[in-house]
Amino acid sequence: MTHVGVSQFPGGQVATTKQLICLANSRKHRGRCIAGIDIKSNTWIRPISSRPGHEVSESERTYQNGAEPRMLDVISMQLLRPRQSGYQRENWILDSSVRWTKLGQIGWADLYRMEQHPTQLWINSGDSTARGLNDRVPVEREGEITDSLKLIRVDSLRINGGSTLRRKQGPRCTGRIPSRGIRLHIKSNRLHLRRKVQKARHRYLQAGRVLPDSEPG
Image 1 (cartoon, rainbow, N blue to C red):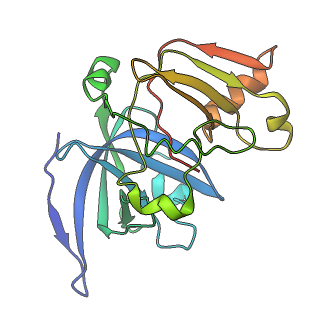
Image 2 (cartoon, rainbow, N blue to C red):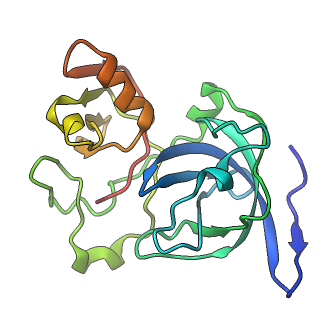
């Protein structure tokens, strides 16, 4: 791994170099939402733009060769400052003048060692959307949430495409967190899941044990 340091820019603005293991690359407005775990601090970081929607554009996230960040990539990036937005306390403003660099990639064995074991998923309020389960948190209880990203293992994952794809929404995923007895029915913004469901002959895809990341709606 390379050196993690601090850079001084004209005008006194200071950028910090972070090395993230990429664990999320999903749709967000007209860009993407990228997030991962910082190698040095072992904490989640979500690089965001300074635009109102905070989406990360193609020019801000692609490598020098034009490649898109992939799951388990180790990425070096320049970040300017933390920028909490509601329950999203992992947000950092990215430095759009410096391109990201891929340093390598970790394996699944490394990922399993980073697995988190929360006693509950956010506040488990029992509040759900019409087509979901445990996928929403009441606004008045937002202050009780201390993070918005987790790396957890689920026993299995059922991906339901159905009519949601025709309405240009993400596929919905059903899973259960082992030993916690928590069932989830959440929407996914993962582009590769959408493509897999579209190519499948059936409305459903069934996966084995997986480590998803998600956030409350």
